Length: 229
Image (cartoon, rainbow, N blue to C red; front, side):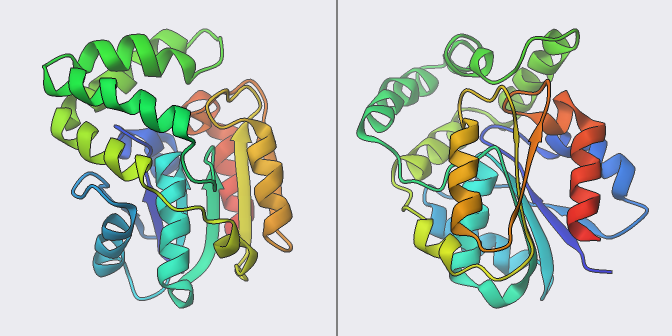
């Protein structure tokens, strides 16, 4: 059975896909690739490709989805399936690019926790009974990765390319998925991607924001299973 490579979002680790790993690990080989070792999307993609199986299905969430699109650009022949979760195919806008500079400075000054707590994570999730626990998990993942990874990932995102042409050339079975309440990567970004990838499937997860893998794990896992079937 085709191996599945999972790419987590910014300042997240394998725990972002914890429910999917628990549910699917008996079905196929799963790999979670770390994405904090370089400060450019092309170098991060090249590192994933170096360590990935010869052929594999690929799913990425948020920054992981951005990286997945670069992997598709670099080595389309390596992919059997592609899933883009809560992500954005466009280059960074000047406004967002500028906003990263003070965040980088704060992280380098020892204020990573406040950056994540006050400026980033509260915008990620929908309201719900598990919101507090999920935010705690997000903070634990971010603090475990640390400020150097934050800086490298921020720079990589600042300088990422537009991947719309990459998606137009995609020929593998593709799932486009997002939480209906995602404010960081809204639904309209995903309808754009669905229009770019011929034959792709769009799945909107109800009662989820930017992290449906842990906000609505059962629905997200089922969508991934259907995509791989």
